[in-house]
Length: 414
Image (cartoon, rainbow, N blue to C red; front, top):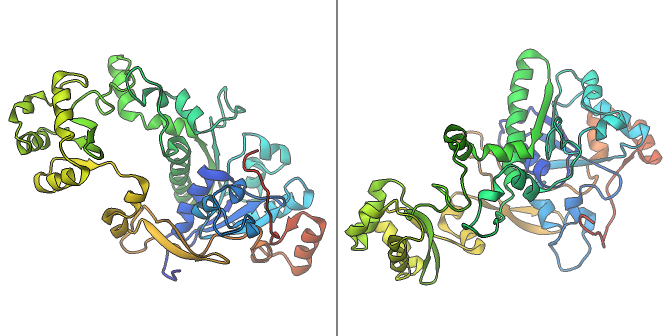
């Protein structure tokens, strides 16, 4: 754990979100020093606490901190438990809002308004508040109340339909593009932009993040071309999604490699390196052509390791397709510190992905373990000015709760 200075150490965040998009967003902020408080309910809390797989040899997820998915999204945070269906819980939340800079939530539009603690009510307590809502389809439009998951959003914005082989089924990405790229990253950027402005103007604002909007923005080049020439792209036939022989995955003797030689000089290095200068003029032949078949046979002649050695010598933009275990143990990941180890109470050393944004002077890091459910309820309330008697009354009434006991047999997402 680190005691170094962090660039967001003066930012305070109340995170009411659950699961992946909000959790990843607030963890990015927490990694760089923001004081992120998870506001969880007085029941099971964030569902991701109970999502398998679990660390440890037994089936009990003590204090909700054995889930690998929970640990991967919640380091550097604190946790409190409030019952927002109770008057006392709502009043406590509004009192907390007065001393925080950001509120992050991921409910369907209108849920917090119906409870009496939506954005308009919160801004009465804190006019400078930045309130970020991550939803599937945004705060306006025809789908505001529609449920969805990553694949649904990708399907509706055209991204899923363009992913896969020609005439084959759409292929799901191994990473959650809409949840992470369209939701969490857009939310983190929106929060920081709004917060920067609020600290100049003294006025906060609503940051409306639609995961569908965010995912659509990933088609910037593809949609830009279509909006210019009107040509509808086909699955597996885009310039960067399967059309050209110079930009494809190819099967090697023992797996797969990627060929990314879009620029003529890299393609020429490949062709000359394998003794096939006649292929130089075939760079932009289509997949399925005679040239493609010949190139495919060339790639089958070497192992992934041999192609790596070839690329080390020729700089031809050829890299192996690694399985996850190979990737996480690679020199690239290790030397970039993209796998880190930290101590989690009760569990000991835990390995997780590192911080992807590298700052030279005030880097982000892991400086606190993921919190147990309700671990910091009393601490956070006291920090906000609640007296010991007030805290005791909230807990006694059930409007707030402290550390949860052991729990097991939770079913994740139904």
